[in-house]
Length: 291
Image (cartoon, rainbow, N blue to C red):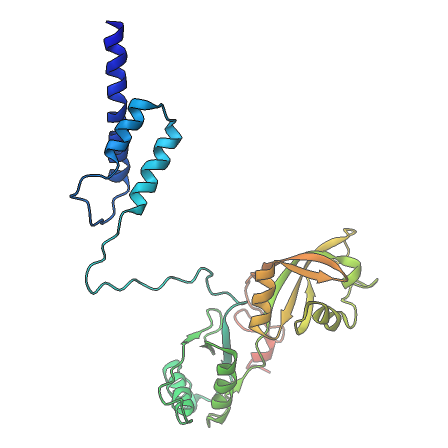
């Protein structure tokens, strides 16, 4: 009786192998050409179970390897979807041009509507040679200021075209704002290399750090407390090119006087806007109409 039980266990082991494979395919279905054909290698599993004892990990690895090697059938006319961007749009990787319509007169407000803005800019750019089919990537309003229009661009050369086209439009009070800056947050920055004894950013720091990191830095803002005794803190560097900001974020490091700090995507804290002329909430002093 003991010999028969041992033999039965040896014959039942390959059945466990096949059942394991069927369970894996049920949990991970995918279209395969040979689904109706006999599973290749089943006899091999039987021989393995009869001759040698493999571990559970070896069994799983063998099932997954053979299952993934089977040919995949794609239906006729099937076109795979393009992969989605891995990084969502942020201030550091989005190119745009900003137009302010707050000073446009009431009789010209209809011309400054977002649909008309898009149509006029596209018409102006399409008049150039080779740009007959050009379209804006996107045109949106600022969430906190509906009188500002943001025109999303695909490349840096498109920003120049959009600015030139916007400046040619004959709308009184229409303003194209200054060049866009791309913020990058720097953590673990050496305080003494950035701030002076008075707590302000050292003169020439932006130019020196720009040369050290091979980027063009427009300005630097210190985020940590200025009166703190900590030797390291956080700051924001504003680059003039989106490609420079993207390169800093992808590189993960920012050099400061030979010492490396960490780069992060900058997410500014958005609070209520208050005008310091009329003390009202909802706009700032530079766009105040009561002055």
